[in-house]
Image 1 (tube, rainbow over the protein chains, first blue to last red):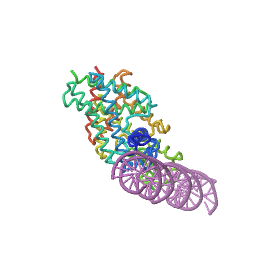
Image 2 (spheres, each protein chain N blue to C red):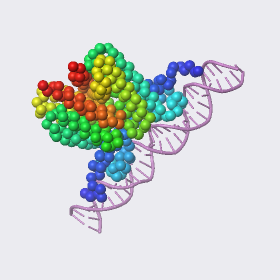
Image 3 (tube, rainbow over the protein chains, first blue to last red):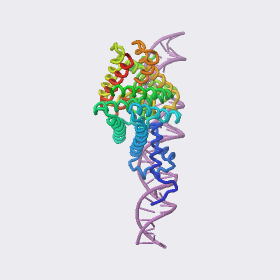
Length: 194
Length: 194
DNA sequence: CACAAGCTAGAACGAACGCTCTACCCAGTA
DNA sequence: TACTGGGTAGAGCGTTCGTTCTAGCTTGTG
């Protein structure tokens, strides 16, 4: 096994693809650009992803899924009250977005929108990510004593709203839409508590 | 003035561009494809839009802005209670999305995500559209007696949530995320009423 | 009739796209 | 020493991209 000068070429390719697709979308990102950004060659890309661009896209979406899940998990577990946890999560996203110069929004929404109904493999990876995130929120709510149905519905809206607020914040180049949405979500969750 | 066999070539180009960019994004949509879909020629496209693809993109976003504003206006005015109106709007979006086979989501979000921070002209048109929609909702809420600040904040979250729920509904190919988000938004609005 | 203006028509350009292909490098094994 | 195979390297394939350009058509006006 070759010990490359830079370890884990495959990992570098996935990370680069994920970042580029987050910022420019799936169609706007070229395989050669991914290779260049990952400090890999075209040969390496097609060695690790014989499925071509679609396969790279699927791996990028799955990577983004994991990455966002970790952020979500960290935010949700640092507050006992789920309402406060969701608001904290929104603030974390807002800070991250600002720090990136308003370019790093949701890592998969651009790819999701461009490929729905046209690239089944990617569509499926996107669906899995959304389910994953929603279930994490639903589990948290259920763990805090919310009944099954409320937990599921609220979790769906939490993910939807965070997703939309991130887009809005990106468009306005402002943290406000995210922080406000976080507070509104907290209020909504609390309204189911009593 | 030439009376073309098909009237209003420019209009046909804008409509085709708007529809294609809604479904495939900005990068995924080619000028030649727009021309073909609009039953126009490349010459016509560059005659009406000397600014090239960017100019077509800007016009498409503005067109989508108007179109969505009309849907919003219709939904908001058919119910006196703003909470019910927002829920009705979410249901209307859900029906529209389902009828299209889950492909016609928000007409500008794909373009917005791909071009943010990279194509200032389009970015600006997108920002205007979001402002436009938010202000329509804010005006409705203010008209229903909500104080200025609440109206503005709620309107921001309404647009964000509708935007995100539409994406979620598209991903899951289900009306539920939108209808549920509509009811949650109604509940949130009502919680500010008393 | 001639003529300008508005619009249509599509060939052709250079650049970039996704992808294939052959050659090569180099650690591990025998 | 020779051989094997995972990984690297990049030239080059056919296609499509956005754009430019010239030519021609149609219509209202002088």
